[in-house]
Length: 170
Image (cartoon, rainbow, N blue to C red):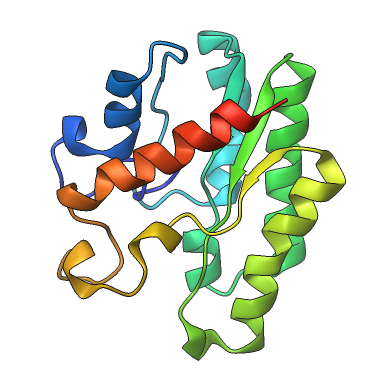
């Protein structure tokens, strides 16, 4: 469950990291329930239906960027992500939480935003990718014109990062 970073924004669906990870691995069957523009509240409202429909063994949650860009109180984002994690675990799924980072001009909020993912993962005992886009660094050529969404050539790096994190889940 994710936002535009997982919904292959600006790309063909088969170019996105979710489709690439699915094609690379026989261990995991991916179902992409990501929606561009999604927030943690939107994911919270949709997760129960997705869990019933798909019955996953693992749930990957990549949400919060749109919350952060809108300045949503971190307590509210944390409650939404926590609800989703609790719902997934109650359905018998393991969880991988994908952390995100805001631009530095968001100041203290940006620091606390990124830190919140580690705190949630630790408190709720989930797997964690602390900063999803870290493998891309600050190389401008890895991003689309908006400087937010990765280009097709960057997607294999993200797919590999997620597959490694999934392999490390207990």
